[in-house]
Amino acid sequence: VRRQRALIVGGGLVGLRSAEALRQGGFDGSIDLVCAETELPYDRPPLSKAVLTGEREPTSTVFRGLSSFADLDIRLHRGIPASSLDLTSRTVTVDDDQLPFDDLIIGTGSSPRTLGDLPALEGVHVLRGIDDAATIRGSLLREPRVVVLGAGVLGAEVASSARHLGLEVTILEQQDTPMLRSVGARMGSVLAALHDDHGTRLLCGVSVEAVEGSTRVERIRLSNGETVECDLLVLGIGSRPNTSWLEDSGLTISDGVVCDRSLRAGPEGVYAAGDVARWPNPLVGRMQRCEQWMTGVEQARYVASCILGKPRSAAFLGSNYSWSHQYGAHLQFVGTTYADDFEVVSGSTTDREFVVHYRRAGRLVGAMAMNRPTELMAAKREIEISVGGLDVSLGSQVVSDDLSACF
Ligand SMILES: Cc1cc2nc3c(=O)[nH]c(=O)nc-3n(C[C@H](O)[C@H](O)[C@H](O)COP(=O)(O)OP(=O)(O)OC[C@H]3O[C@@H](n4cnc5c(N)ncnc54)[C@H](O)[C@@H]3O)c2cc1C
Image 1 (tube, rainbow, N blue to C red):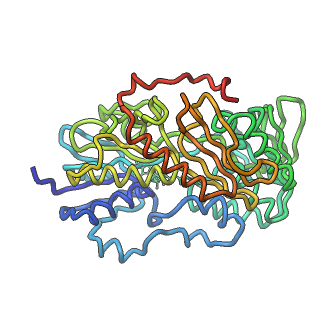
Image 2 (cartoon, rainbow, N blue to C red):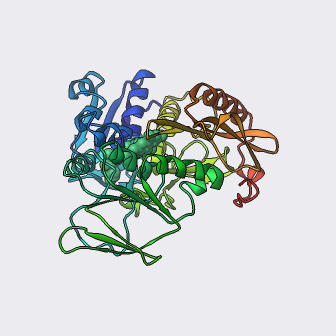
Image 3 (cartoon, protein in one colour):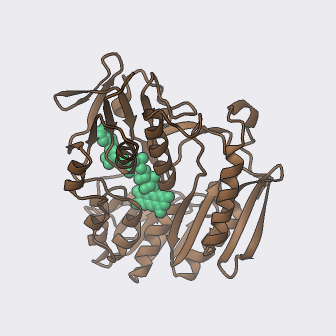
């Protein structure tokens, strides 16, 4: 059956890349792209880095000008979110319109988590969108004492950018080291030392008891009895998939849109990709949602190739690649740290130039690098080849969630 109407919900990375891939692959039907935001699709990684330091303007992150959407014959619907999906009539509701589709790509991304009982104080921010970045940048110019909640990648980048501007910065982290669950305690302590050496105060093993102030945030009271004075609080405590509009759709929603190995989310022609998609990832042997730029791009291309009827493989096989820039260090991650062994295979952690390999049953399954991009890319290729050869049926690959053997 010739399919003529592609509808993409979510005008972020996945939305744009999948629309582009459809056109590049010769799709000659209509493409509608529904964007909740009024901005044209833009790139998020610079928001926590060059935009906060002032090296780039927020609007410079926009991927393409308006005219190039017309050139690609992509119909943009901006500023109004999709509110529901009806799988029987195969339509999506946007405002008063019912947009019909033959193929649907759900790419609605995720939104930052906040603290449950956070009082409404000025100076408390999350960072997801271009507006958030512009607001935080404006606040940073007033030279505040900055507190960042969460020492994950986003929190670390905000702290690094604020230190770049010479500001007083404290990071509060519940775990004993930064990124404990992602990289383990030993590599976490390498990241902790990076903060330390650049003048960021990192408090680990603490949680927030209260955020206080009269109209603006003034102080954070911690579980260890300590109080940290601050003028700006940025939350970097993870995010939730944007699925509320799909609640009554009949799709399976459980920490994301649950997909099969081909990123199919329901009936034929319904897919999800990017931060919002949860799929059986053969790399880790379980259902996973990846909030990574490259995974979003790879999934967007894969889904487009399925719609075009020419997927390269029956299952989506990605390499879970991501990067981060912190205090001038270039960090890269690939694969998984669900491993039973790890080793620094090149360079040294004290020199801040190294590559770590993570192995499971002797096979390379993941790598982390600091300032060693070429070697990391070699590991990425090896992992991609190995993933390509895996049996993707989940049951055969379930691995223990207990990482203690590794770290
Ligand atoms: C500040 C920041 C820095 C980052 N840095 C890095 C990095 O260095 N390296 C890395 O690998 N990854 C990084 N990431 C992650 C990466 O940017 C994301 O994984 C990627 O943007 C995911 O793309 P997406 O299209 O799934 O979601 P998004 O880019 O979030 O796009 C989803 C879009 O859907 C819209 N939407 C939501 N609900 C609806 C609805 N109902 N109807 C219509 N539209 C809707 C949203 O408004 C949004 O515009 C960073 C993320 C952030 C926020």
